[in-house]
Image (cartoon, rainbow, N blue to C red):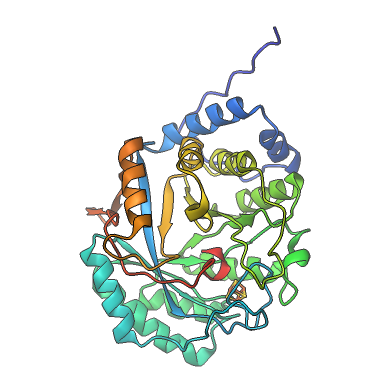
Amino acid sequence: MPARTAAPAIDPATPPRHDWSRAEVLALLELPFNDLLHRAASVHRAHFDPAEVQVSTLLSVKTGGCPEDCGYCPQAARYHTGVDATKLMSTDAVVEKARQAKAAGASRFCMGAAWRSPKDRDIPKVAAMIAEVKALGLETCATLGMLSGDQARALKDAGLDYYNHNLDTAPEFYGEVIHTREYQDRLDTLAHVRDTGMKTCCGGIVGMGESRGQRAGLLQTLATLPAHPDSVPINRLVQVEGTPLSGTAELDPFEFVRTIAVARILMPRSMVRLSAGRESMSDELQALCFLAGANSIFYGEKLLTTGNPDTERDLALFARLGLRPMQVVEQGSTVHADVLEPVSAQMPAGRPCAAA
Ligand code: SF4
């Protein structure tokens, strides 16, 4: 019988590594499935209560009409996907949605806009939204595209806690998916956000036709950033008719679980989020993802109303798996992150901008 390799002992006080090599990451992705899950689950347990899952909500404050050409995105103006472009919502309308989310128990409210980057004249409007949402006692998050240093600072000053900006994929595969900006542009925005002291939410999308080595490249890039993202959304491509990536070969679901598991091992203190694509996953696949270390989910790709079957399915899945919403502790007080109640949060079919 071949000798089994024991998972390394885990000391949660040990600082996370930032020097992972591509070969090391690939070796993790290639572990026997059970060994990989055991190792990821051990890391998860050392840093988090594995029965807790953080739940976030998302509102599209400006939908569609985007000049970028992200090959997966139904909000790009150049693709015919049936998404109608809207103007930036009024502050009052956004605050009303945030109020509803808070009433349902939300602790964090994310505002997404389909922009390449905000214009300077948009910043005061978004800053007003952020300030008013923050005044409700909610954590604030935004995903608005690329930011300059000054824009990041203005949003931070308005009360923004988190900024979402995904790397999407490996550096060498990026040009296969997006042609209207460079990988370095993403890294620059993340640096501007980090420089202000804001928290980052940054991950990617798998199942876009990339190789396993390229998935390792995405994970390695995330895990070698100067600071690990506080949240790491791992999205599974939602194929939307009319986008260039519609018709891409489906990723093996076990490969998706492997990606989650390796993200958990590499970034042990981050929230690893199941995001876009979750609604098409079986309960069993989601359960495997939670076992592999996913501990955050997104509500927001659809309008959630009382009696919505998707909401009820999530509630039932949490009950069946013995999971509960994570308590968020901030500034000395404990806040319920229980948003497993209907929350109005609307995104166009498919996925939010930049795969929040
Ligand atoms: S992902 Fe964001 S930046 Fe890319 S096309 Fe869609 S809305 Fe625009």
